[in-house]
Length: 631
Image (tube, rainbow, N blue to C red; front, side, top):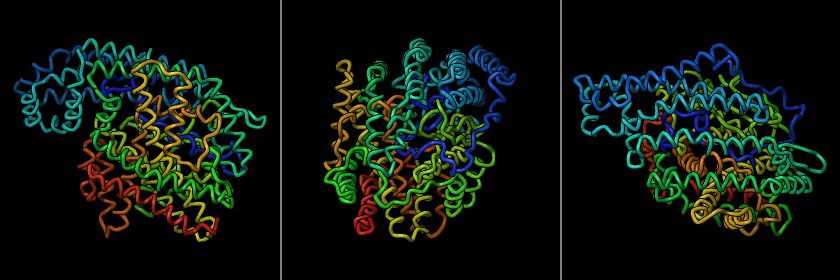
């Protein structure tokens, strides 16, 4: 998805990876256009640019082109000479600051183009605008590619001396250390430039093809035609026959398009294999681990812990749910269905807003104040619209501006939790922005911390005020299902991706092979209480994570387990937790996960850390078992 071929996510880049990738759209909600959910906000992008044809936008396009060329003329081939000069530290610092300013400018331009496109991916005018802008910014960025490559050629001792001599350069030490980690995988300059420029006609092109195709697909359910976002919501309908029809409608359209999605998947997996082979990455996920600044053994320990927990988490819960439904096995379309007596009212926008803001305020008023800005200043786009990107994301744009949130709000409880999730991202992005364009972005694993913590705050606030046994059980069940989707399901996604990328190294995969791997992996994770019926083998094809950011998915499980442990510390802390929490968010991408978690007494490299996080889900399932008569 990214144009920058270097594994890290903290350098000049386009729209693609500046936003948190879409959440699993099974967390979407009810029918679109419901009159009782209120007036939904649409974002105002004028804080970036007034319009696509505005003079300001055109001026910045020209400035990006001119300044990138001037930067290249000034510094290309000269960093080694600059570094050893008498004022080498300050001159290198000046170069980094110039680079950061260009990162912010190009990021602003591409953020605007990307958000415009996300608002309606089916609009040819917007698609052309996005594509043309991407081409121009790729050209501008290609002139800057030399900088990190050349920086990594500096002698370690010379660079350390320069940082010690210049407090300004030393300020950028976290960013410098990050790019130095990529040195072993760095290629010759001209090859890097080729990889970079060719991305627009390879990986980026297939990402765009997937997005525009998925947004244009229509699914038929009982004679009604609907978008992906809405058909997925129908699988949460209280009526089993409606859920079945939605599942069949989803499978039918995906089946009709499986050749295209199979081609996209094969092409992107091969593209990644080529890049990995040239760079020297051995494992299919090594480049993602490097980008996430997380050790492979930490990820392996997490994955092993989650897979070992399948029987006492997902298998156990779905067996309990099947019993509530009076069935030996749940159909795959019943997996996220509401409980038989669960309240079915839609939640209006104003109520959702108040629920999340009050939960945030209960933790710390400062957190609610930041979130309030998103509502007051039109930083949220909430309605479902034809052609709009599905799912939800929070896009930080650039530090000189502010984040934007995209939702597809339809009024179900899960939508409220999605709002809490994306606002958590937004708060994190606002707090980290002072670190600057190079150091504000966080690794994907830590990027999910604030979002999942925001969900947890909202859930606990709702649970505390719910006294009706049926409502309380429905709320607990919904949270358990979200946690299973966030931990168990995302690890299953990761296992699926690993198998697909490993098999792709042996040759192209057919749609049948992809479907077979999908069914095997899902059966293992969901357990014997879920029956995977005909058509389910196509469901891999609508998951955007596999396309946009390979192996991103384990970041969700990382974040959920981390937050479960973090929340336990919060509940036990007498004072000072909020200050430590805000300090963690303000750090942005300047610290490793070990350093960020140390003030809370947590260590992700300790296997006990993962068991502690999974125990929270285990405990909630136990609470539901004790409440079983209320079903």
